[in-house]
Image 1 (spheres, rainbow, N blue to C red):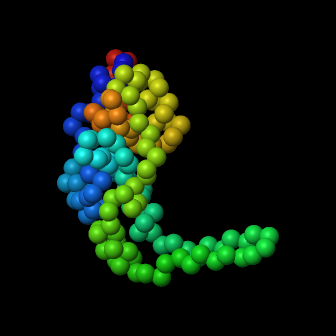
Image 2: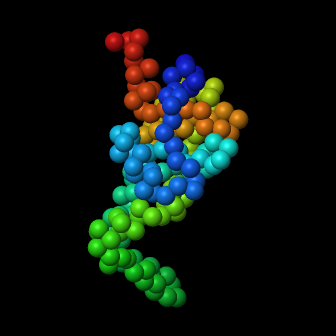
Length: 151
């Protein structure tokens, strides 16, 4: 089975000029946890997920890096949780989105997609055709279509 045979064609997405507020509003409205970030030509330029949000709003501890010649201290944040979450809403999505996006081609086989989702430990993979976003596939989609005939 190929990607285009079972992918979800209605893909919720944000544009690269959108704010994180737009992303979060769409996640809440559609009960999803992540989505591709696209440019004006609908090409995938990044991917933003709930994990990226958690990494931003979580407390960042001080980091001490001890090299042979010097010690560097990277100071964490002392901002309150509410202040970090409020500041996040106004950021551009590209400030925290992953720019290195794992995608699959429109003609990719389900077995390869299962391998990618498992090895990369990701929940969803955008589907592209001629570099343009045409669908999305989740782990649940792969499981449903893999076992449908067996159950």
